[in-house]
Amino acid sequence: MRRLILTAAFAVLTSPALAQETPAPAAPEASAPETPAPAKSAEEQAIETEAAAFSAAMRVMQDELVKTTTQEEADAVVAKYQPQADALADRMSAFLLANADRPENADKREELLTEAARGVRFVRELPAFIRSAVDQAVARGNALAAEEAAPASAEPAPETEAAPAVPSA
Image 1 (spheres, rainbow, N blue to C red):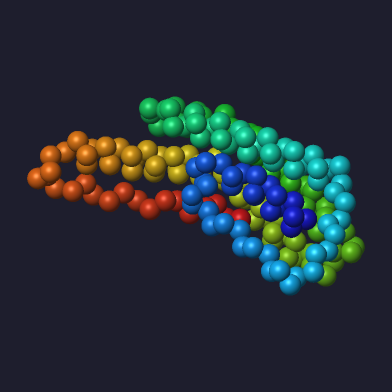
Image 2: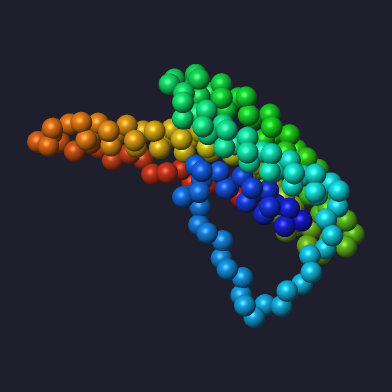
């Protein structure tokens, strides 16, 4: 199930807005023995497919956000994509909660529930996070353009805010 959360998170993190802001995954240790991954259920495969479609939608949303000129337009773009985020989050939640409740997972139930909550929250918050990242990137670009257009004797432009933190994962 951790694999499902990581797969869904990886699918959405590969969007261009996040590509430079997330660290590269650590390389697996060479001495660690490879264990075969258990076969995925039809539901898990369907969620991974939905996560891939969601990732593509987030890239489209990002492109649309870059083209907006007002806060209201940006709000409308995010509102258009939020139902898809909520649907994926709900589907992941149901699947992961059912997995945590299996008898064979009783000893690690709390850990699985914590991971599930983090993954679901991450997916649910992603449209707003991308919007924030785009807003800040546009603000930085505008500040740089203004700085380049200003005469050399003018005072330097104030620094912009740091990039937003990645949603809780």
